Amino acid sequence: MKGNREGHNGSNEQPNYEQSPHILGDSRSNEQGKANDRRERRRSKVRRLWKKWRRRFFHPMSLFTLVLVIVAILQWCTTDKQLSVMRTQIDQVQQQIDAAKSANELTAESMRGRIQFTNARILESITVGKPITVILDWKNIGKSPAYSRTAHDVKRWRGMPEGGMPIAVSSIGSAGMIAPDDGGQISMTDFKPVAASFLDGLPKGPVFDISKLGQYETVYYFARIEYETIGRKHFSEWCAFLIDFDLANRQLSPGVALPIVQNRYMLNQCPKWHDAN
Image (cartoon, rainbow, N blue to C red; front, side, top):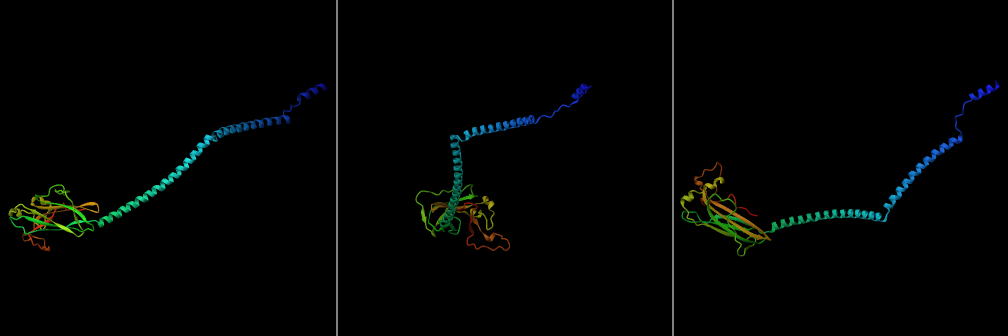
C-alpha cells in the first residue's frame, strides 16, 4: 500500500513549464544581437554609398566642373545685369536723339525759307479779240534764302484732268537765290483769240457749284515753284480758273452784301493743285 501511494503521488505531480532565468536571458540577447546586426548592415550600406558618391563628387574633375558651372552662372548673372543696364542706357540715348531730332526739326521748320504765292490778278480788262494775261506774285516769307525754279502753263479745258499738275520744273541751269522778303512775278497769257461765245459760256459766279465745272469751258492758269532751303526740298503750287462774276444778272440771297468788283471776270481757286510743303 505504501508503495502504491508513493506511485500515485509520483504520478500526480504537475510539471514545471516555467523556463529558467538563464534561458530567458539568452533569448533576449539573441534578439538584441539581431537588431544590432541589422543596424550595422544599414550603417555599412550608408557608409558605402557615401564613399561612392564622395569619390564621385569630390573627384578633382568633378570639383573643377562644379567650379566652372558656378563661375559661368555668376558671369551670366553679371552679364545679364550689364545688358539690362546697357539696354536702359541705349533707350535713354535713343530718347535723347529723338528729342534732339524733334528740336532740330522745329528749328529747321521755323528758320527755313518758305515761298508762298501772295496775289493773282488779271492784267487788263477782258475784251473780245484780246489775249488774257494773269500776273501771279510770290514771295519768300521765311527766314532763310531759298533756291528756286518755276514752271507754269495756261490751258482751256472743260473740267480739270485727272492726276497731278501737268507741268515739269526744269532742272537745267542754276536755281535763283531768293533772299527772305524777296519775291517775284509770273506772267501767264492765254494767246487764243477771245470770242464773245467763249465769254458767255464761262462758269457763272459768285456762287458756283464746283461739281459742275466740267460743263463749262474756261481758262486754267497754274504754276509750280520748287525750291531748296537749309538742305531740304520744298514746293508750292497755285491754280485758278476764269469765271463770269456778273453781279448785274445774279440773284443773291437776302441780306448778302454785294462784293466790290471792278471787273466782271475774275479768278476762282481750282479744286486742286494749290498745295505746298
